[in-house]
Each structure stands twice: as structure tokens, then as C-alpha cells.
Length: 121
Image (cartoon, rainbow, N blue to C red; front, side):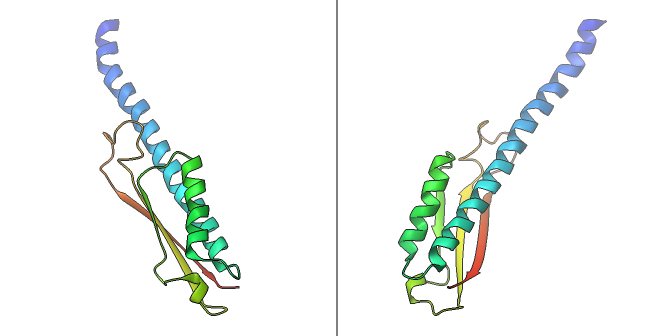
């Protein structure tokens, strides 16, 4: 009787455990992208700072958190050229499959993108 219960419950428990690990890693990835985009935009809006400075800030954060395969873009162009009070936008994108500890077996590959908008100082 116990072996039948074990045979029925084990796949459900394994699915629950690995699904939780996968979901947690996706939450971590999304939060890491949010932090990187925010800090990058904060760097870009400062007077005299370029997109290269902002991208370096985001790269440092993403690298320290072990995020791979990311892309950092600035849709509005160079922040040095932006006028005061103009919008500065930072977009950070990463693949969920590249950053999955379980090789993305439970979730399909998605491109997670975070955009942050702030006004130039």
C-alpha cells in the first residue's frame, strides 16, 4: 500500500519542488532586471554621464547576480545629448532559458524586458 502511495505522490512532489525552483529563479531574474534598469537610468540622468556609463552600471549589477545573455539598450538615444527634463529610457532584456537553473524545462523560453523612464537632471 505504501509503495502505491509513494508511486502516486512522488511525481507530484517532484513537479512541485522543481516548479517552485523554476518560478523562484524567474522572480529573481525579473527583480535583477528591474534593479539593473533602475540603477542604469539613475546613472544616465546625471549631468555629464553617457550611455556607456549607464550600461557599465547595469552590467556590473547583472554580472554580480550571475545573469547571462542580457541586452541593455537606450531607445531615446544618447543621454549626453538629452536636454534637462527630457525622458531617459533604459531597456534591459534577458532570456529566461539562459538564466534557468533547470534548463527551462518547466517554463517556455521568454524574453523578459524591463523599461525604466526618468527625467534628465
